[in-house]
Image 1 (tube, rainbow, N blue to C red):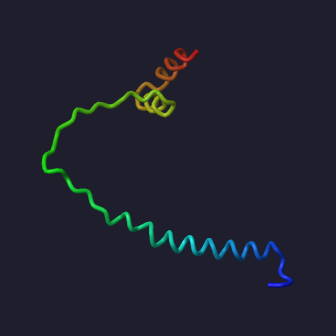
Image 2: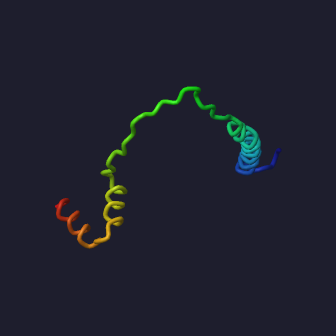
Image 3: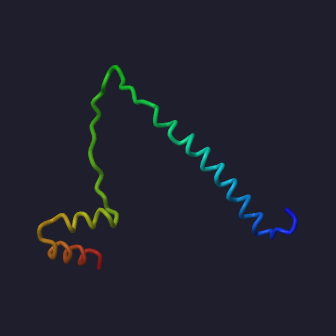
Length: 81
């Protein structure tokens, strides 16, 4: 490969390696899809409760899920000041 720019060599090598990586990934990725979940013979009932979401996403959900949107927004604004 005499007379070929170093950039062209790099890009050609990179493309070949990328094609090889994609080939391996396309074969390996679906292998995990064949695993199955087998239920236990004896099931146990476990108590579960939701945790209050105090993040900005949870606060947004609480504000927009109520009927009186304006009142909730004002109430939330007064708490944060």
